[in-house]
Image (tube, rainbow, N blue to C red; front, side):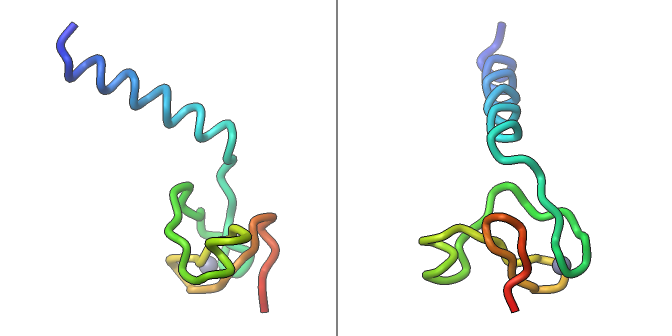
Length: 68
Ligand SMILES: [Zn+2]
């Protein structure tokens, strides 16, 4: 097997594991699918988790509840 194929397989397994650990969530504001890999937009998100929707900009906490 070439290194490229091995890398693709390892990457696929990694995505699968992350997908199981972090199920896909939807934006509470517009129901867009939120990215699994997020970059904390502020200190609270870095500490407590949470996501800013890339589509509508609404914030949700780590449980997927909308933050007003
Ligand atoms: Zn949204």
